[in-house]
Image 1 (cartoon, each protein chain N blue to C red):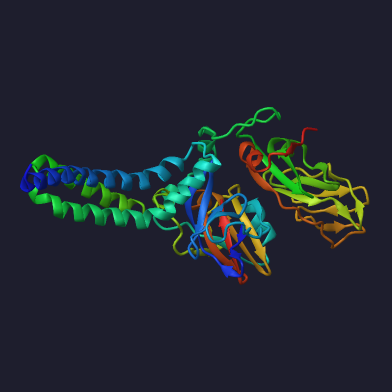
Image 2 (image 1 turned 90 degrees about the vertical axis):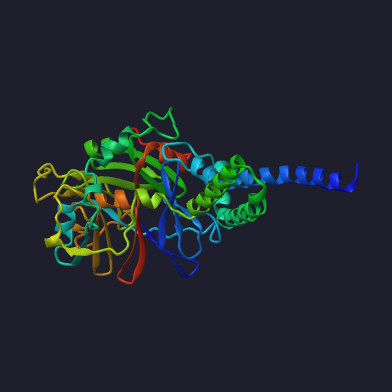
Length: 172
Length: 235
């Protein structure tokens, strides 16, 4: 075997490995998004270990998905010219999946379902449109009292408030 | 309700996930993960920290109004654009959800609403239905006499340490007070009358108030999950 043939053979096997890599990186990124999403499903049981894993993955996912996107982009540049149209479609899919994963791991979709209270507004007792039988969470600190209607808190779940100079988290 | 400070830092929380139908929150300052029901950080920089409980009440609006009429009271306004998201039937909806954990064997169904009291390291669950029908419910937890009382609205509940002047007192409902009466009051064996704020309105204790005890209104499965050694009131 002369040197030229050997180079071509090596080139081809190297390329075969490289061709798989964008796909693998895309699956890896997707996993970084899907593993915690799967573990932290509403209505399902979360074991302590699964929850630990989900939180650990969430911690590293933002950085790792960016690395993965960068890797897929670099590989695409390298492979694009020599690739068939089928491979190019695969490369595009890997790009889309890894980029989408990088975006999704930065989203707090729990806040899509239950919007946070960006700036709480308050009304006086007389201006509140509440029925007498409606339940409120009530707190009194010093001379200040607050009522948080439970029907509102059961949706938003969390309110960061300050009552009588005391910072409190109203949770329901 | 919690004080949102830990290790001398003020924290701002946001909803971040769910753990066996109890939500997880994170703080913007450190990104640590907290369990809502326990107020404890379970992961991140502040792991092991516990938020201080802020004593609060769950009352009907009418009762809250009647108790805070002389004060500077404010009511959280609906957030614009979300009025339709506030589902008055949410309790009935949640009751239909499957449970992530089940704890049979102590006579309660997983989604029965209980009032959980922890004193001296001992946890006890009082079925809400029982408290409503038997109020005042009197019991002892770790040697501390407690009374669980349903208010004049028939809905709001408070828990008091039924001890005054170092003596255990027995509270009972004044036969004349019914759900509609503004005269609602409790009597005790020492000749005092008590209002729903836990303050004596007449008798030797007049002007003094019973110590309020924190409790958690919760589903049985959630309470049992975090208080595995809990007992259940079943008198």
